[in-house]
Length: 191
Image (tube, rainbow, N blue to C red):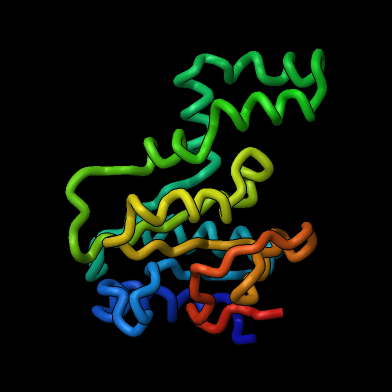
């Protein structure tokens, strides 16, 4: 595997490429690309994300959707954020997780991510996947997003492994099936 900085430089070039933006060469599949990286490289990837999302010279419109920030926003909207720790202590983590899945559902996330007037050149970049786990699992969210973002490329910054069939968060957790994405972005591992 090439080093992470090289891969991120290549990613920056790729997201500006016309074929990437238009989803050319995907055989009519959805334009979802996985950028897998070793979880140990999280801080390097976050620095890159901070830099690239503010880069005015890009030939694309990068829209970052941090899943953890969206989760907190959903909780704030429901006015439950402050009560979550007490609920976990009182009722247990399994109960709390079940309740939060009902509130922070895939549709609630999509409502926060959705925007009007998708444009050619938009790139939706999903970040914060590790931070949002276990409240939102990216394979479920991507499945639910497909009808809403079929005209926009989705780039998933994934701290783990995607082998073309299964996602393995943090390179450790049990694999989740997902096959609608492409893992060729900048030589991501296929372990």
